[in-house]
Figure 1 (cartoon, one colour):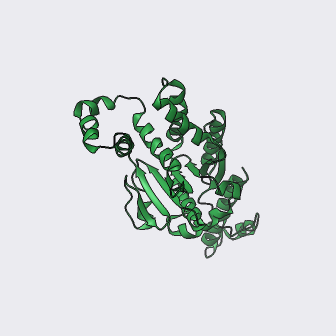
Figure 2 (cartoon, one colour; figure 1 turned 90 degrees about the vertical axis):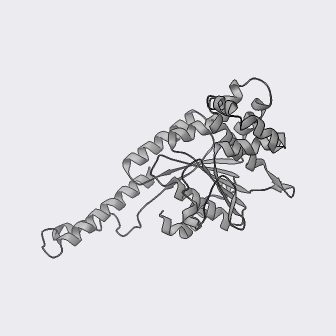
Figure 3 (cartoon, helix red, strand yellow; figure 1 turned 120 degrees about the horizontal axis):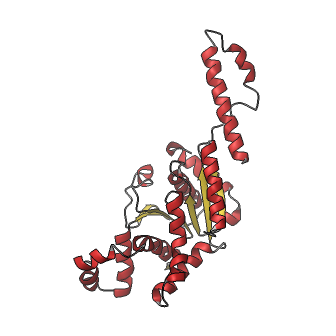
Length: 284
């Protein structure tokens, strides 16, 4: 998938089984550089084109989605198309939004959370920033509008492999270690959402090279071992279009010594090798 082919690729996402398309929370995971953001955006657009109300989330990262849609995405929800909403969740903004829902009054919030001494100590609360971020994802998954869920589908463009797993497991870890009370109750609800196979799917993204496929196999094994969440689909990104069937380019080797056609034959053979690697990656 490339940025200039997003509309086409968004349509191919609908090749997913109906059971996967109907999940509410789609978490897109993978190692850095495999195109998670492009796949996440394509998936969100595909779900939107199928008639769903979609929220596409980034997690406190340089905006990777807005430039492809001609908009700027920040910590406030922004509507890119009717029914297609984006947000880049920032921990401080998410905390403010959550606390304001409880305290109701901005003056009270400012007096507590904008106090420089409180702000200083909040920096040392373990995983607070990550909890604020996933808490906002959970909030929008549960959010109601006109007696129905506000968003039919939420696509989460998760951080790279290690951090992504930490984010997904955080709610469960905190729910098991926090003392009884509101925080424990809410982290348990978050963990339930992320682990619910009826509502959530963890999709993995790879590219057709041996190292990426190997690391993706390791990621899938870790997700299963640590029970991070229910697995969904594997996306093979940047797979080349097929120009040669297996073995079709081999006769061109006889042209390699030819001064006029040798370079053309070399390019064709390299392309055939790339396609062969992609087929092997797809099979794995």
